[in-house]
Image (tube, one colour):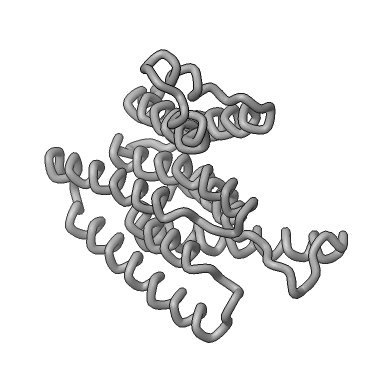
Length: 226
């Protein structure tokens, strides 16, 4: 019988808190003292409270579900998938508001992947070389393809989305990121059609891709385990 992987759960909670700190960074920087800063981490608006609860519940649900229902997955494998989804949450929220994915969050994702990579070398699993090769090729391949799309279809995809897809390749490898990108495109198409039908957006308006990437990645990971 599979049990919950508590290492992944603890890492997920820590990442959720760090995401909240980033979302609250202006308030956090304005306060002096450790106790004051800790209090400022707590969300001050209902929207931020809802964001934190959705992020925490979704990420923990993913961690628990994969630990219990997918047999034979290593801690580091689970950690890469759950951390990726958790890291995309603030990107999706900011992209939905400002149509931009901050480089700081992308760099944080790379650092997180680098930390996991260190543990992958310290505790090597079977097919480690194959896994790393798949991740690097996927990241590079997606970057090239997205740059071509960016040049041909200007305005249809942002540079932040290109960087995020490449980082997803480093976390998921070929199979996982292929599923995530396909699911993200399907979600984005459905959302775009809905917004056009409801006349909330016109064909000339920008539509944030970040939220679709979040939902698509979450669904692909929880449904395929990749």
